[in-house]
Length: 461
Image 1 (tube, helix red, strand yellow):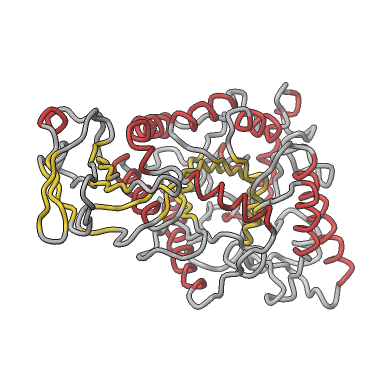
Image 2 (cartoon, helix red, strand yellow; image 1 turned 30 degrees about the vertical axis):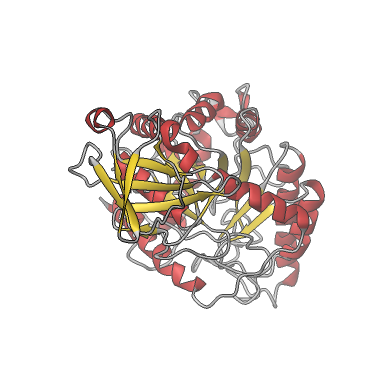
């Protein structure tokens, strides 16, 4: 129950944090290579996000239980002291042995789900590295980690290989704060909150060490693991205006783009030059945004694996995807992988169901852009960016397993000769003009036995 409370309040915090974007000017990237990659990313629409680390063995909410802030939503075992809990958490490295890890299964499942890009937690705030870094021994290839003897011990290399072979765009989640680094949370002082625990102006050499450490780790990610398209930076409190936490991001991004031309930078919640797209968390904007954006959302409640976690229904996730895409956004859907390295059965089931829907309706999702009125009644609209086809996606009610026999499109005023078809059905449909729109009649065979559930797509061309 406490773990669920932690997760729910984290979600609430992130939702409220969305208000940071209000009034924050978006910086339009000028680099042609970055602009081209952003355009390609916007075509993909549907991404796969994975939170995974030693915390997955216990079902802990990733990293946050070792943050010693005195707030209600950070819950941990109250029968032991914080110091003991912290030591136990760090020692999870010594039992992390995900012997059932199979990156090809992950990638194949994501492909079947219709996902087109992938973001992986290379390092969360706790500082544990899921690659063979040279900067710290707090990593999956450490001799203290039993998995270091495995053939696929450098899991990041294996994951990026598997997804790259299936033509996914690749993203590296990377935490700017590092609660294991002695140059961020120094052992000289207690960890008062999530921020650096010393005065940077009084200990500049220590901060310099941390900046070099961060630079070198990002360089490893950019040079040793093949093509990387997105650097997804978390921990927005690490910013110059907050206690002087300037990690010299300009230097990091310049280096990263030197190795990975066109790299998309996502310095989330910070704004400015290195937030090439914005990331409302667990939330869908009420209206379209006129710049690139992505809703990141959990498939269940917690970002990381939690035994018995409650998953969102497939219908809800399909509707979220359609709503997001109709407003010009991308959908990055997360699953928490368990301590053995496996996607939980419920996650697998949902991804397969999403894939079945995308197989029929993907044409109305990929390579589309928003078109007014975006959404009306139970219809969401999209428009293919190249051929101009308009799609009207009907979202069913919870107690509506079959599509209606007729669908009214209030804002479609087709020219003479315009055709209307239905994805998953061969042939054109009959329609008539009604007021300023059209009333479309669906085939009785389709209504009785639709090829998918949750939502159905009309194509106007």
